[in-house]
Image (cartoon, rainbow, N blue to C red; front, side, top):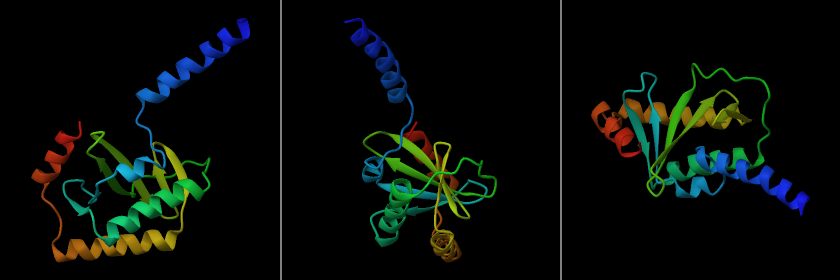
Length: 147
């Protein structure tokens, strides 16, 4: 009985702490309905939703998290591309950072194929050049609706 009580006292606080943090797992990516790829100033973004590139980005992130190995060395996020993954069911924003060779989510960095990241960056730059960016006003509404 004492062992059972001890076990419960060890497990319950960890479950409560885990539930209070924003948590990304592989089922989280299925909840994502849109991805906002922020510009460097973070005052506008390109929206990815429903189409092929949206699914490619989602699947890439999910595959890297599932299959990728983590790094113990800190990854410099100053020049990272920031993607906001939104989930209308949970009203949460998850920040995903793309750097050369890494994806970082919730402070955990996963090694990723830098060629694929470069391909996504080029695709995003081409959409910016076409004028597909949303305005800062629209982006502020996204932040407010996911607070």
